[in-house]
Image (cartoon, rainbow, N blue to C red; front, side, top):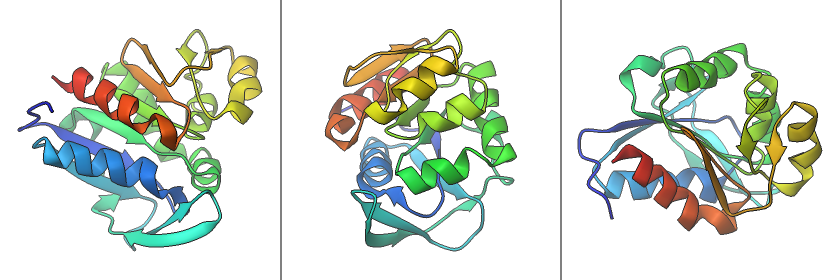
Length: 178
């Protein structure tokens, strides 16, 4: 495990995010010493789901998307969950956050349905990435190269397909932060 003391990571999500895709990276990064903050569209706890349909726990939010100063973090994480991803992709501030992370060359780790935000934010063009398989056409139509691999690192962009890829996803993020 890496020593990430002094690193700050922002996770952006809305209700109905895939639980493992937020909780596992959050907990692993905190265990490694990073400060991890969850940002959403509001300040109320957000609802996790398992398998897109089964509600599980609620996760506390540390601030809103508007509160997030991308210049003050070392990485941004976008979990999936079909409903979460479909909602967050339409949030102008979420699109600004991922665009700014890319401009600053911060590690931007996006998993499962999360790459919809990259598509809507205009960030897929010319990139090699993966996602949940059903997004392959969306990525290709947006000018990206979609591949079926557990983790893809293209510069500062880190993508994975689904919760089964979380160990590789978290390791790639930790490596990018060290």
